Image (cartoon, rainbow, N blue to C red):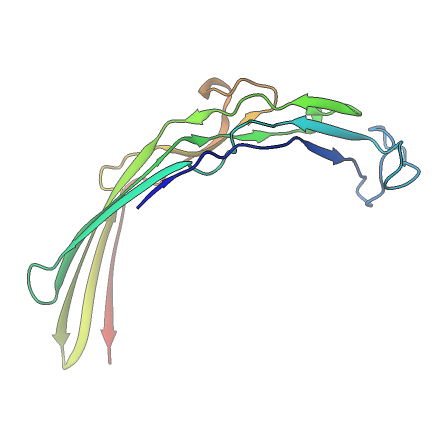
Length: 181
């Protein structure tokens, strides 16, 4: 499998401010606007056109193989790769002023990562019933990479200002048995 994308925002976003009761705000002090579509309804615009969309790798690949060396036994491996993943932009209330135009900045290009998973199964009879035992080792190399991160709006995205970074799982194992009767 191979997937190649080039996702970037194609327009800017405008958002309007409301209080916790759903009433439109005239300003950030909490004064109520005269109507939902009124000229005095405060808003903010995020200049994000051309900024890479974060949270999903724009290049992915996978390769898998399965061998059946003898009857009832199966063994294989899956390799997956994710690259050109960008951080999500993080907005906070501190980013906003009334009727402001906020520059989105640049999303951080997260380093690529990959995993190698192994699996095996054996089908056999036990006590006159069919059974299968399965084993998996996910992320065999115990390789950790960043899967998601956030950078503040207005910042030049880099690892120095990234936060809330989420990492891949390390090596995990599982064994299970299925009995058909």
